[in-house]
Length: 62
Image 1 (tube, one colour):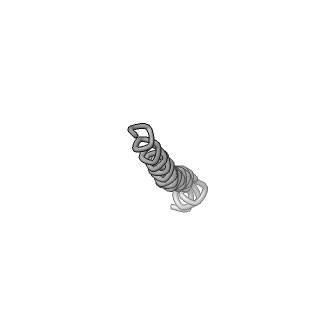
Image 2 (cartoon, rainbow, N blue to C red):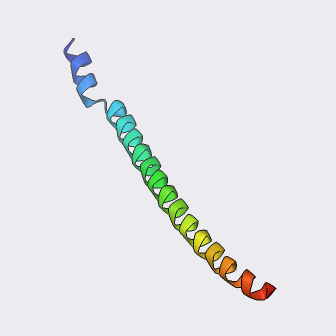
């Protein structure tokens, strides 16, 4: 019985799996935040470009 408890205490496989799970979760969170920020910045850039094009088109037609 003592050996079983000692082996259980020394076993770090569960802790390692939890650590890998936490790392994967943090990486997924970082990707999600980055993708959201990138999407917002792209949206603003395309809106600014569309506004510039809209400014130039009526001038070119006249």
